[in-house]
Length: 432
Image (cartoon, rainbow, N blue to C red):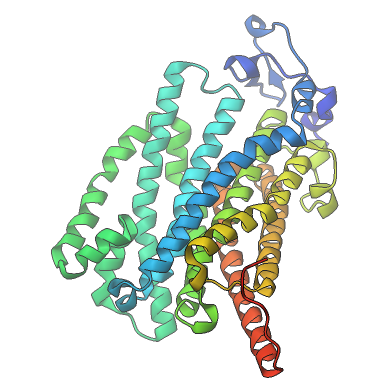
């Protein structure tokens, strides 16, 4: 063990320097330990006491309201997708459906990593100064504009390539439309279907603004570092999500998968939202208790026992349980909302509801465990989990969610077909 590790203590034994609550981070000396300037050595308070104030109830109250609002938005997104899938542009250009999971995932990745970075900065006192607030926030907003523009175009290219592999041919005639729709919206792309030069103008217009956003992002050195070297997680996450889009593309028009379009944004979004919350909390915890490259002694194992992830009194385990307990009630509420609006478009058998809830639970359980594993691995490599874990996890959540959802529809259809052959029919008056 090195000198840094031997000085670490359990949370209840440690003391948080006052600098963490006044906007100034401790400096790091040459041999590793945190050093607090004499001028800032004032009354300290135990961080263990602060952490102990966060209970299961307080975490639940913090998370439930935004989780429900996000779920309502996802529900309406699914209803709209179910309506838009019959538009001529989606019928003629099937690759637009392949774009749905990666673009939804990209939007979530950019916003979640932004929120996670700002949350960590706020909890460690980096933006207590109003001048720092303006600089950090404006540079981060400019950063996600650059990332959205470039990654949108890359998502379009990925959809084209996946479509070419599945069909055996590459349709260059639709390339401009896909590029335009990935940078702006499918609505404008539908308008641009017969306007050849508008698609090129839109793409070049957004690309022309990129240098402006880069100049704004350069105000904050950490943001510029992300802009230079933080692309790989987003690109890999987009590729993972694209396979989920391919599943959606291949299943959405088949009778046995009727309703796939409605539930895809929900199951992908719920899993991504919950794992992003957990990853952000673990990242903030590591920033407060250790330095990049050095894991706390009680988090040394890269592959922790799943029981320690969900069943201990440790703060991250407590939050994982809260997030896991939100899955079933949340999905039930969103299912009822969709059934009330689109009852004829979704399966309403109890068998499907049970498999759907089980799929959501499996998805989130896997993601929460992987969040703990990946946060430790990234921190050990001196990489910020805020920027390097969330994209991978949400991309995997899109693939898991779409795949498990398709499996739910398939199993439900097979069981229903078998029951019909046996002369047994399940009541379909409602989902419960």
